[in-house]
Every structure is written in C-alpha cells, then in structure tokens.
Picture 1 (cartoon, rainbow, N blue to C red):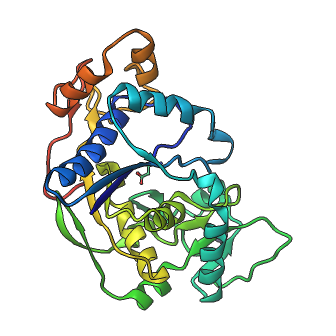
Picture 2: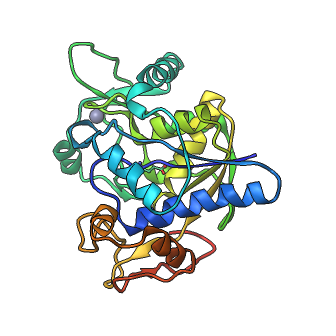
Length: 286
Ligand code: GLU
Ligand code: ZN
C-alpha cells in the first residue's frame, strides 16, 4: 500500500507549485492502485503556524483540489494533534535531548554564527540550561547528542537515491517554538507516522529537512517511509515560485473560469503557463 500526502500550510492561497505537488502525490498513490498495490492520497492542513495561519483557507484548498480533479482523504489538521506533539516533546526532554533557548534572532545574529542550510547555525549558547517555567523559551534538539544516540542512519529518495542522515548543517534545530506547540519538523514527522504515510511527497526545497526528520524518527522509534522530493516550479527569473510573486493563485484561476482538470493535465505533461519552468533534475538535490 502506497500512502502519500499533500500538507499545505494555510497562510496564503495555493499556487501552481502547490498544484504540481498535490498532483504528483495524488498520481503516485493512484499509480499504486493501478499496479494492484493499493494507494491512498491524504490531505493534511498544517495550521499551527501561529498568527500566520488562516484556518478558513482550508476550504479554499479543498475547492482547489476538487477543481483540479483530484480525490483525497482528509486527515486531522495539525491544530487537533497538539497532545501528540506534547507527548513527544516530554519524551525527548526526559531523555535529555532538548534544551531551552531564550535567544532572539537578533541575539543569534550578533553572535556571528556560521550559516548553514537553513540560515544561521545556532552556536549552542543555551546548551545545558535547565527549563525555567517562568521564562518563555524555545526547545532545541541537542544535535550532537541526538547523532551520538542514533548513529549512522540511512534514508531513501525516489529520485536522488540512498542518503545518510546528515543534519549537522541545521545545528541544534528548534523543535518547539516559543509561539507554537511544535516546529514544522517535529509536527510533520509525527503526523506522517500517525497517518501511516509510506511515501512522503514534497518539493525538493525540503530535501535537506528530511535529514532532521530521519533523526527524529530514529529518536522516537517511528516507522521510516520513503521520500519523493519532486522538482520545483520556477519563475521566469529562475526563482522558486512563491505566493508573493505574480502568477495567479489557484483560487484566482478558478474564479476566472479556467478549466482545472485541463490545467492538471498540462502540469502532468510538464507544460507550464506564465513562462514558468521546472527546475533541472539532479541526482543530488540542492
Ligand atoms: N506545510 C509545508 C508547506 O506548506 C509542507 C510540509 C511537507 O510537505 O512536509 O510548505
Ligand atoms: Zn539560546
């Protein structure tokens, strides 16, 4: 059984890049059905992004997917899963894998840290500090400790092949934010396991984040899926398509009377409107 998912964050309307991502995940599940293996395609709303999150967009997303001619199963939104994030956090705290950090972005920048995959690599200033319930703090993963515990672990991407988990370029990542019940890394990893996802399908921009997710799976004893990090849609200037740039949203296209199923067929054929192109396939995503 192949279980894929599309996991949008409701902090803006979906664009063509999301359509491409949803279609890719949908079709991978449908192809498995065709092979007689069975397949499911899930929709999960990742709505714990604090004030940026606009839950009312979830309905718009569903109308977009329907318009594209996709069929999916809804699974619970992240906002209803806080207890599972808290339980995992408690376990990692217990095991000494997390430490509280009260540093602000500006303070970290002032420490002139090395810059890695995801921006500044946290220089470890708060490591070893104890939790002070009076002070709002983020919880960071002690990456050296985590790596010492899990050792060398592998994961596999359908396009890029076998990988060894190497999250060092992220440093001591935040797993619980000051303003949210879990970071994307923790929440998505727990949810994919809870939802029985066997093939995590998403854009190549999240390829490196998978190193972190693989380590979290090992720490928390979660099942290990396969990954499929697909190519990204690029603007005419070669930048990743983003909500703020000026290709119309799916909702705009829908409202303008465009045929969503036809658009989906075009995207499957790698034919893109608005001078959009696809990132070059590489064996190693970067
Ligand atoms: N919620 C994430 C986003 O919209 C996607 C996370 C994922 O697919 O793992 O960028
Ligand atoms: Zn700190």
